[in-house]
Amino acid sequence: MKKKLQRNIIRCKHCNEIIESKSLYDYKRCGCGKVAVDGGLEYAKRSFPSFPAEDHLEDLSEYE
Image (cartoon, rainbow, N blue to C red; front, side, top):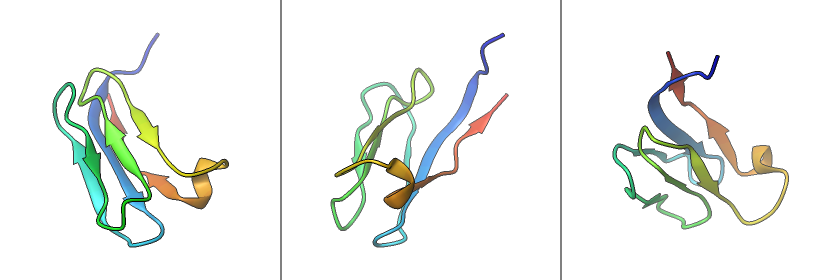
């Protein structure tokens, strides 16, 4: 069974800003511009400069 996304939220490990995408196509970039989140509650898309993602962001998303 697929988990349903309740909050699409991440924390940038470079500037410590917490950003959340609340609706479809709601693209949000952190203050330093290194990470971004998109997709609202439809999908969880993350943008970051290089792998591994864990070096750049912490996923704080909540699922049902």
